[in-house]
Length: 227
Image (cartoon, rainbow, N blue to C red; front, side):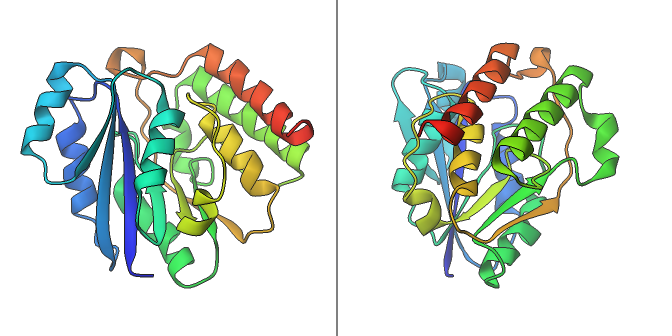
């Protein structure tokens, strides 16, 4: 393991982008670091920020969704380990260190950061988001016979060959249930570790809606029985 790729999908995140990148740059993984921003059709306020950045930036002409942005980033990533970072401050990049360590040491092929495994996070969730996340995770447990505790978490770390060999079809937030379903159906070493979390609401730029929750249910069922 010599190199880690950090994929950051970006859509109109000019308020937080610099701080997120500062936090990511300050984390020492002990590996060569590749940061890939995928601009998913952002406005000019966000695009103007890229002039001052030294990391790789990929562009979508039109907004396609988080899943589409991650698909582009994963295809271009050259690291031995691939992780996902949202372009906001809900998650702390320092929390990735123990997740990545599990892969470096050979203890796991895929590691999820679980918000629910850290009891201190409960007060940081928005109520409806907490219920929705718990419901979707429970459905995942039932359908895939797993003890997974946080299906919708952003923080996911993969051996590159694992994630690159999975065909990702989802364009929006249904990326999370699709990739989880396909990982759980493979014979890979899977692990979860607790992480911290500070939720933001819609006025702060949260983009997930109830429609995405419905789509997540459909996606979990689809990839359990029909794909």
